Amino acid sequence: MNLNQMHSTGMASPRTLQRLIDRLVERGITDDRVLRAMEAVPRHLFVDSSLKHLAYEDMSLPIGKRQTISQPFVVARMSQAVLEMPSVRSVLEIGTGSGYQAAILSHLVASVYSVERIHSLSWQARKQMRQLGINNVKLKFGDGQEGWDEHAPFDVIMFTAATRQVPTALMEQLTDHGRIIVPRVSRAGQELVLMQRSDKGWKEEVVQPVVFVPVLTGTEY
Ligand code: SAH
Image (cartoon, rainbow, N blue to C red):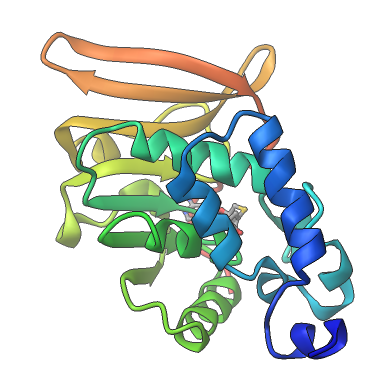
């Protein structure tokens, strides 16, 4: 099979994929499970065909509707933050977008729930999951700031859009020792923050500066 055929059958070119994996390792992604998931999910199927040649570069890319698919390193870092917790069974993601982060998580935890406020993106992501035979990701069209009560509590709540504050409604849908992973807007810009609930209250760890599109309120078609 030549490279063109591999692309049309939905496989990544092994060379560009390996270069990306090497870069993730260099930048501190040490968890093998995350690296294997990044190898297994074909990112080029989550971007427009005109951008496929950039799919294995470590950069965010436009997915329409003024939204972006996150940078692979950030997807890997956030996924690694999920696995830093012992025995995670469920993750709620706010901001399905292309569905790529959810597809990576589907390899790492038993149940993934993801909410998206833009109808066409949610619909496209659903189609993509079906095509890839991923059946442990449940998608919902709606404002993710309300969470997904029906499936709560979640071990992890992950925002893939930036916000100033995590709504209380969401905190109530987290398990007792659950973790929130959030690109938080601060005076200095955006930073990736890990919030962990414990018996004594909340513990916070700032990971690094990041760039995400903002959390918006309500829904859109
Ligand atoms: N995880 C995505 C990244 C998408 S970008 C991926 O892997 O491709 C962030 C997404 O968050 C956008 O699609 C945006 O529409 C969505 N979003 C923003 N505010 C939201 C809200 N309140 N509820 C649900 N989704 C939201």
